[in-house]
Amino acid sequence: MQRNNKTVLILGGGLAGLTAAKRLTDRGFSVRLIEKRSLYGGKVSSWKDEEGDWIESGTHCFFGAYDVLYDLMREIGVYDSVLWKDHKLTYTLAGGGSFTFNTWDLPSPLHLVPAIVKNGYFSFGEMLAFAKSLVPLALKKDKYPPTQDHLTFSEWAKRHRFGTRLLEKMFRPMALALKFIPPEKISAKIILDVTEVFYRIPNASCMGFLKGAPEEHLIAPLKHYSETRGAEFTSGVAAETLQYDKGEISGVRLSNGEVLDADYYLCALPVHNLNRVLPETMKRERSFFGDLEKLEGVPVISVQIWYDRQITPENNVLFSPDGVIPVYADLANTTPEYRTLRGEPHDGKSRFEFCVAPADDLMGLSKQETIDKVDGDIRSCFPETSKGARVLKSTIVKIPQSVYAPLPDMERFRPTQKTPVPNLFFAGGYTQQLYYDSMGGAVMSANLASDEIASAAGA
Ligand SMILES: Cc1cc2nc3c(=O)[nH]c(=O)nc-3n(C[C@H](O)[C@H](O)[C@H](O)COP(=O)(O)OP(=O)(O)OC[C@H]3O[C@@H](n4cnc5c(N)ncnc54)[C@H](O)[C@@H]3O)c2cc1C
Image (cartoon, rainbow, N blue to C red):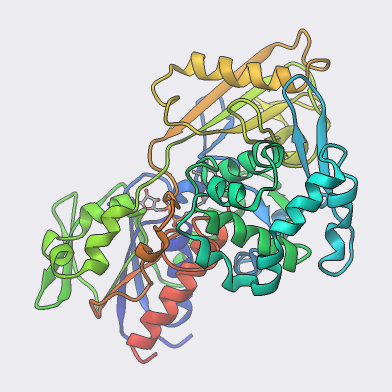
């Protein structure tokens, strides 16, 4: 690799920052990355607790659609860590029972036929009404969702009259799983975009799980790749302010008082943290920066529960429209390296991880109150197998501001990776790219930001 004598300072060591470090190191830049926390990975971070069990910021499902993520994983030699599951989406219901959207291994749209005709829950009439509502999407394809960004998904669904049951049982958990906000808050654009991708690309809705902790199978290998090629990483120090001088960034003041400078600056921070480091003058001078204040993070809670028996054999992601667990998985089935408890084998017994949302009203609950709610929901979904089951351990992670909230009319405030300040660039799930705030989105944003930096440097 040829070095190009240009330096880049990356702020934030989440998936976007780490991907950009790799991309820019590959292109010959001298890269330094600053991470506020003591561990890397941001919202995909994972760590061992004092009993030796892995804790994750949240359950991470790998959608078939994220080609850019799999290219990256192949480049660093970890693609084989993704374990692909059967191509189906299963919904569990309060009181017991479930329904499943299966697919066939056929070209689009034939792959969706079994989901429509034999999901075992929605009537053919309901699915037909839904199919009719999607005619504009089928005709205009990806041009259609942006025209619906002014509506919430609930408003869109009412206008298209496809029925409350589909909205409540299928789309409520989908909206909550995707962005932790319900259909009456999420922009219709997001659900329509995802539906369009699922419709057009047969494998897009297939789900994978890592075979173990994201730290071991993605984050550490990604950092190691750049580190062994000269990139410098510093953790436990936060960027405090970007110094703005004569229309350019002249340095970054860190929480330890140091000031670092570089030829190019890449902020790979969550948008609420970015808003804190951007100088007020920049926000006043340019709406590009000032408008970022309109984007806010969504609260979410991740809960893990180990039981003394197997509650479900399901080796896949599960959705639930009822209660507070819209999306969850039994990691003892999906993630072989997680079949442990306190360092001992936990084979044949459940170890669930739940995404708890909407979390606005739950953030103030105690750990025990939250665990009781989640435990109650899982017992309601599996009344038979959970009878008499004991909770052996539980953990909880609260994230007050996680992914940005894609509310109606927010799309226009998502910034591009290139900013009006020539040596300042942005990356992160909230910036403009196809996959919103997701792992695919973080990687795609970093690819785009790296291209922009390379182009600015004439590299
Ligand atoms: C519970 C949960 C479940 C999820 N599930 C999925 C899923 O199943 N599939 C999927 O694709 N996506 C999922 N996501 C979304 C995905 O994790 C994120 O979209 C993605 O990781 C965002 O990466 P990022 O690098 O843009 O931001 P982040 O991961 O937030 O990284 C930003 C980094 O910047 C650091 N930082 C902040 N302030 C400063 C500062 N001042 N100075 C220096 N560093 C700073 C942070 O500590 C962090 O490490 C989930 C998210 C959560 C919270």
